[in-house]
Image 1 (cartoon, helix red, strand yellow):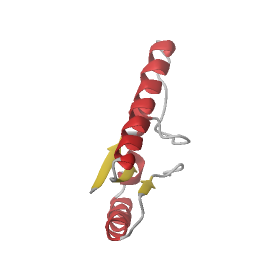
Image 2: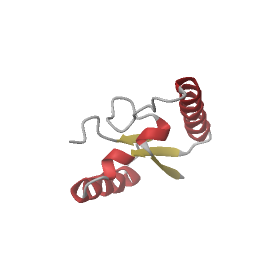
Image 3: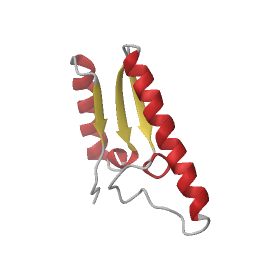
Image 4: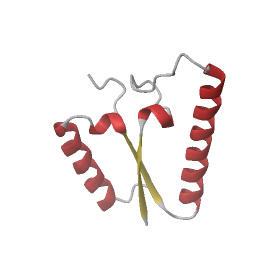
Length: 95
């Protein structure tokens, strides 16, 4: 009973990430679109956890380099074998 989400930093608003940019045109549209995505993600995660699921979120920025992919895969494997309920993998300065 484990769920793994892979979120794009742009669409799901990875806080502090260089890839979570905002388009210059139609800022009101984008602000609402992004806010709705974040609300939906939070509601989905909360509902899954309440129903007994374990939830991991992997951010796009954690998968941009081969070495990062290997590290992320190892962290997911470790998490799946653990008792931890939630996991989040991402970088705020992907470099």
